Image (cartoon, rainbow, N blue to C red; front, side):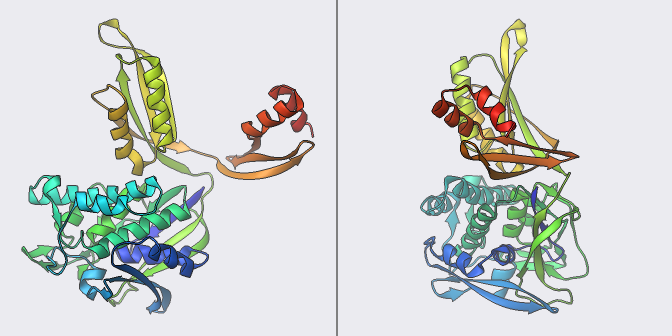
Length: 397
């Protein structure tokens, strides 16, 4: 399984994550050109190779209208108000994301990360989410960081993203509201149910932006699994500490491993089969890993249907919204499930009827391959034979 592992032993910030992911690309300069081609208002990305404690890596500079934010702001976001930037609402950020020339799934990822931050700020300050006006998190350099990470992860397309426990730093930070402990309240709120720790290093090592990106994309937080590393990237911070101030990203393959997946389910007794079928199609179109139904008995002995949806953890909220939108249910259950999966690769094979596409699976002592159904159907139509005949012929040759 293609796995991406983030080593957060020096925390995480948006620019550090961006730098580490750029470092994983075959051609980092092409990656920067792609980010600059998005047309984010007033934004320009620049890549620099820097060194920390003898380790070389990538530092990303984000220029906003030709100028770069100060080190403290850009490297480690605090809760200070930046009056030279206009405040932004979640609605304004959604408008920016929607205008980008990106696939809909990437736009939804961008908005979902900001929603995590908005919800955390809402709980900390006791203000409804629609009334939250971002300070440091809503400025254009943070928009640039989150957009870059979402775009790069979509391009790298790992099957699973795992992160280490997060080093958040120690001490306190100064902000518009006074002196606050590290991690900042919004960061701590985002990192609920995520393993985090402090240490001897004084300062804010994990920013709200970094925390939200990790919380949204990582399916697990644990020590590094057994992984065959193919690429290693280093995203460099700005400040210097005794320990190398960088975030390391390792891209490789894990074999015979577990996958964590979310299972959403609900009971329905007042929809037609056609309407349930339509809902299933929409969920699959929007990225559900699998959708299935089971007949069940409900209250007052009414026959009903249990709809189950399997999805990646990061897609949970979006799938819940789709279930409510396309079904009549008033409640959705959620459970995390461990899933044992075989490593899967796609390829082609020459046959007496020409080249066909195949899927190959291996792991747990098993190895097998399967010809794509569309190719079997095409050949069957061309030869005037049944799919069963064609499959048997190809398996024997």
